[in-house]
Length: 110
Image 1 (cartoon, helix red, strand yellow):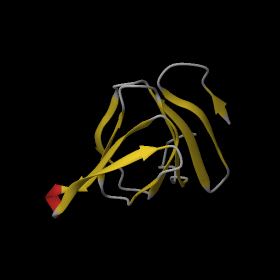
Image 2: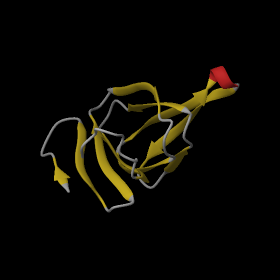
Image 3: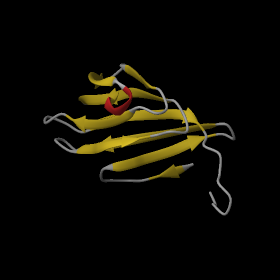
Image 4: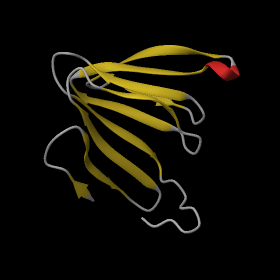
């Protein structure tokens, strides 16, 4: 388990041998740019604040779709889709990112 007392980014990490859970905070009006995860499906669970998640894979014919993320809202992101996450203007966005723990590659350490 890891804790971070302040600022944007991962505030807490936990999980077990097979599960990875991160509590992420984005400051108001900030974003994580479009990126892709090819290894695992991800479930985002809104904790507080609000924002938007965009997902898609235009190169593969999957149009970009916008999803609201707020307290109690779940957004499933299948592996292979691009995604971006943006906090609203009023308050920090806090959400859980939940996925199967990624396999370590040769030479990598935890």
